[in-house]
Length: 218
Image (cartoon, rainbow, N blue to C red; front, side):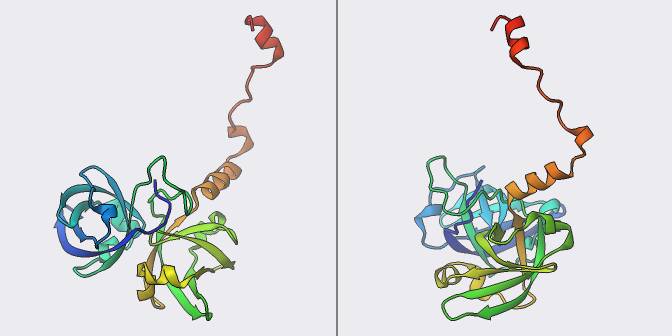
């Protein structure tokens, strides 16, 4: 699990095709956050949870499978691509963002970028099949970054981005038409799922009551 607080911006330095998938090699920056990364750990690469399969001085590798390639932008990575990086959260870490699984729901396109003086407003196309999972002032993950939905309509949503986030992530390189990975809030997805389940399919109510407790010696 992740929190959507980016710890480093890395660079893709190797893209190798492997049986329908890809082996990606990523060099991270000077952040000590990744110096102790080890094989089998989870790492978020621009929002997609990947398993580390090899490590070296200043770099690590992951195997990206077909399912991930079909739902994310990872298949478009080339040598030199810049990516947002975050290690999996530890039980004692501060949860600075929100609960992020690294399970990207879809890739979408940047519609518009508006400069607002002290911040930047990023408008992204909202796929119709995911409209039930997003609310104004709720959380959403864009390329692994935990952000707050500032505005919302039927086909678009906007997030407000502070200068620090622009400077310390890959958001500064986005432009209209750029593709980004989206992960909708897991809490919203569970609520939407529960509301969609017919009442006849609901879990039967518990038979544990005062009578049952007395009959069973409690």
